[in-house]
Length: 310
Image 1: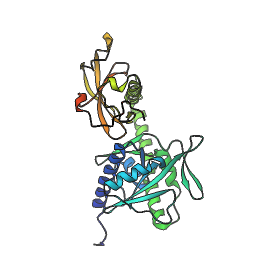
Image 2: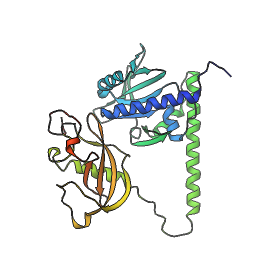
Image 3: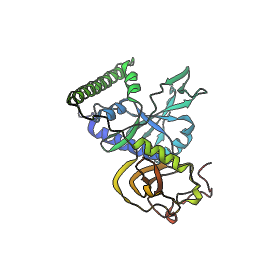
Image 4: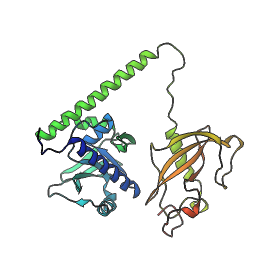
């Protein structure tokens, strides 16, 4: 055993901790990001399958100045290389963070700007696939796009070995999924109503986005001057409480909507993320929402602007 080789477990723990920290920093400033590469494979697998040299995040090029400033404030050192192409790197302690730039073209296509052209991203790459690994939640590039990217190994031997290992891990995931579906189908052959249960979370999130568009922020107990509210995808959850709840005073309720389910979501503003509780009726519609501080006097200190936009 090589005593000079770092322990894979301890390195992975440091990288996961750093990944969680960076994701929080980017959420605070409202910068979208997607994890890809080997760590994305491990998040899909639900386990650390191999050693990783760095963290790979895709970010919008327009957000980079704010991202660089935020990382710098947190102790990350910008370490661009002379031959970098389509992205750049930051280092903090022993963790290396690789950022890949994203740009949206004239026809809404997404690409990474390269010296010799454009590196296109497929439409299924930048979705809302969120996974959790060892307590860290990350949004990942789509599984199909990730699998395609690992299908062809790179030329350099060490990188090729990583790609091969990742491709094998992804193949095992597909095989396991097929086996599970086969088992479920075999177990559902006895008749009865076996319709799949529809996940209400996307409808709740869409309804909450619509709710924010229906009132003036200065007439609510939500903070104003904080930028447009953005409901974080795949983060709403049913608190499994269904009873008479007290909505904000300005809410006009129908008789049938007075008994609602209580949901909790996260809403990202320009400079911070706020936890929000929402009343959801039987039609999966948000009929009222309020921040968890529950009192406008406890709202964060914000700029003088009186609207969400700008």
